[in-house]
Image (cartoon, rainbow, N blue to C red; front, top):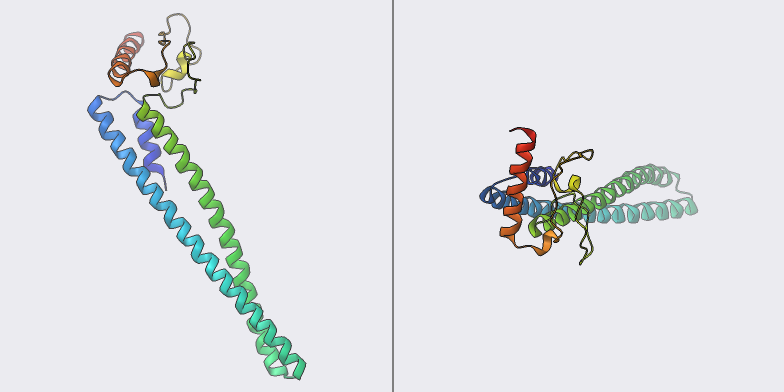
Length: 193
């Protein structure tokens, strides 16, 4: 359901030109809007299931009450019909309870996914690399290099690129883009491209 946004997040982790980054960010926003609309659809489906379940339970109670009244007056034909309808309503109640449980789980999972994707999009819009560890404000120690580059090699030694001590969120967009371009160029040189 939310694959377009996840794909957009993955694509944004690669180095893009500023125009491509803006286009990608806009597509991510659009995908997030669609995901939120999907959440509304899930909530509406769950509400419909809740209403159907309440109606089936009420029907089951009515059938059982009628069955008891028919048994009290000795009307075996009505008791047999009520028994048949009671079984049908019990099966529907059981099915709707299972459906309700699955829909609640699906909604919960989708809400967590949308919240996680929203948080990632906020990080990207603020200039923080996706997957980078969060840092407390005022922390002067640099981020480990393996968290700065998407798909970075944690076993990198010797000439790893230095990370500036300034928090990425505190730098201006131009500084972040210039820094990213410099890092990309240095990484390409290291990889021999």
